[in-house]
Length: 243
Image (cartoon, rainbow, N blue to C red):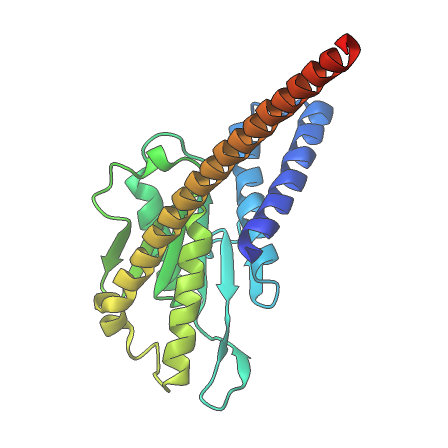
């Protein structure tokens, strides 16, 4: 609920700003501008969902992806601290197949920042549907492929953040355990959470349709009842006038 409310408000504001900017500058068709705007959209959504985390916009800095996040996690003592593990995010405006070079580039950024996890967000799900899996692992690093349409970047980041907190509370040194992390059930858990999120979204849509149909049916029954009551009253009025 928190995610969806924030995302809806941010999306409305960002879209409104984009329309005004396009009208003033006439730069609507610029691919570079579209890419920059998409990066800002992803940044603002994550910032809105997790204002307590350290979230940096790094699109203009080499070897740092587009966004770097240091999540706040809970330690065994219960203290909330900033994790030393950065999550690196690339946001790319693609409606056709995501080039493999973009994945290679993000792996290089992960190496530069010594990060085990990256998220590559594309603007259209069609850009990643041809990939056999929604995550790619190399050595001790893993990149998750996410679609903006399904808000996968929010779900995946939330799952990684939760996993880091659980490991931290158990006293696990994440950097020393990176190999086991990339091969363990954490990845599968994250993917399952993303799938669950999509299923919940579909269920909510289905419930909304059912509620709408039910509401329409109730309104129809009420209308029919009013018509029947009015008909009875009209007949009574006729009888009274005849008497």
